[in-house]
Image (cartoon, rainbow, N blue to C red; front, side):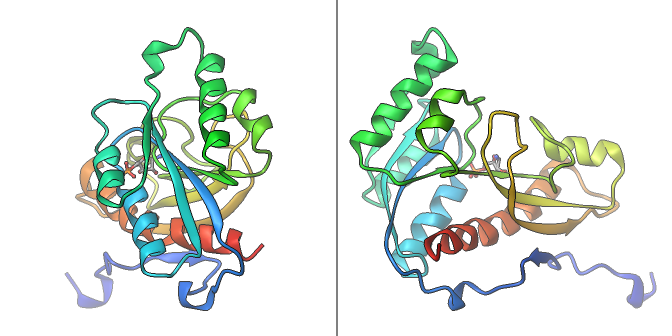
Length: 215
Ligand code: GRF
């Protein structure tokens, strides 16, 4: 293949184009993080705080899946974690009421959904209006909901990415705060593409939180 047509797989475009080093947050944000699985996004946020790149403290991690690796990561960072297993609650609203109570008990100002795989209800949204963000593995408004990476591959788009947005009741539909674009390569599988999208997630989620800290 002609060199000039090769794609730089590490290339990406982040909007807005800003550096975390320019973002000295003015006051510490008290974060609550919600995660269901691996927790790599939790990890980068915890690291950005430890490195002094974000002026924040993770007050509590809430996880719903007893096997979530995010809980192990929290322990490694000395962050308290609380298991709220969705199977122990009759309705989504019951679970969300308990989540709100837990977030309030831990004096949380701002909520980060970092791979939280449950639909949320008005209970949670009303308790933290415009103070819940989510990271989603597509360029919203394309490919909302589950299996977003698979959806992008199936649609044959050539560029996808990830989005940090405010959470509202409609799934993956709140105002967009930050996005990163990722090229789709001819041989991509869900796994290879998701891995490259995650590299960008790990850049924009701390940036978005730092931005929030700046008001
Ligand atoms: C991420 O791809 C995020 O966009 C989606 O769930 C995944 C969580 O990954 N909402 P991790 O658990 O943070 O590694």
